[in-house]
Image (cartoon, rainbow, N blue to C red; front, side, top):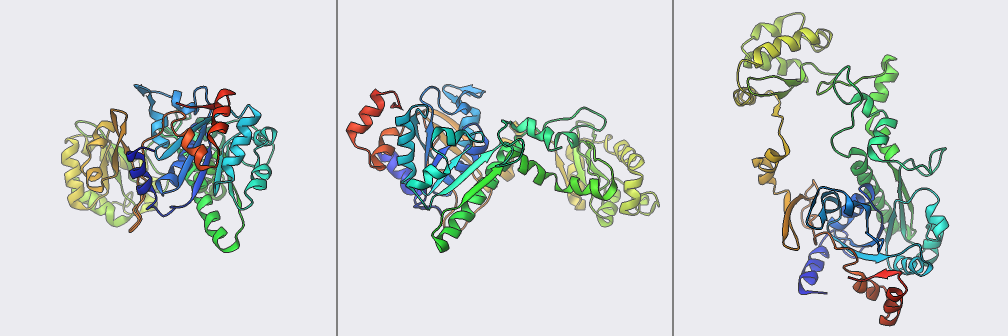
Length: 408
């Protein structure tokens, strides 16, 4: 271990999960995002990757030098070991690693771990109190539990795509991987709950999460909409069925977003756009009336807002106490003064290449979440992980010579 690694390990040891060791058998985005959360909270996370290419996310672009954006986004704070799970000795090595871990997280398709001999029963045989977490596309049972699935496909299956996009337009995928990242959060939350419970019971629990269940959870309001009205909700663009006015409005140099959730805010909006009479107009005076006359109201507001530039409207609305926001491209977000004030972006050193990534979006006094180390190169920490797990040098050489282990 280099001096830099020792420093980073010491920093990680100060997190709330200091002393917890995680075996990460996940790939792509959802599973790695779950184990990244645990790593940022201080868990020593051993990432097992295929020797031939590693985690699929390494190949996901765009790339700068050897680094793929997806991989960097969800794999910081981990140590990498490259083991071939197609070989019996690779699978046996994984079980020996699991015996030294508190948590195992995997996202294989249903039944794959059993056929490979590294399912929950096999792992629990070597570490009875382990927290075993499985993250899949469709969940642990049901007619589709063995099917593969990706974020965009599950956005369609769970109805998210049907309520996303412009009114009257085709279904749309959300512009961020909401189900991958959301499922990672739920998986990490389940692991934390299981670790907490283990402190009292001494028993390891199983955690199951899925993209499908996350999608259903995100659709809770829309499921109730259907049950309460008997109608399927449709895409609303930036609008919201429950509020009016709410969404994007044109200005002289581009759209801004305005959100009005009650009558008092509407009166302030009317004053800001110099139409105080609208607050008493029976078509607009109450929230139900505004929803009923949404088209006329939005058209009238748009006629007013398009006459001045966005900066002036945002200033006026802020002074009036009306919630509003610019529609920022990513480049402008990177320079947002609020982001700078929060200090949420942290710079990673990727071997000479530097990149800023967001830390976990919460603060914790005393033991704040942090980034212990940059994302690993493939197999970078294989030897040290095996030594820490009790392997001898001869065993390590034999694994490498037989092709089950790739060392850098």
